[in-house]
Length: 85
Image: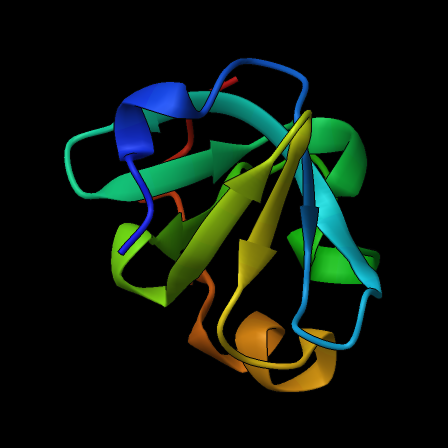
């Protein structure tokens, strides 16, 4: 299991397939908070999204590799609650 203490701000989060998922804004509790610039489009735009630390397979340099492919990992993303601006 990866040492989540190695995850730092601005590290790239990639799926097991090497596809970009987002960039780390912060680690909060048991989740990685992604930057708003990787927030998606439409109703998702401008909201932080979160990935469970349980999906982290390893930290390689400045990349966080997930145990799931990117297209699957994004289905596990959680969106921030409320109307934070």
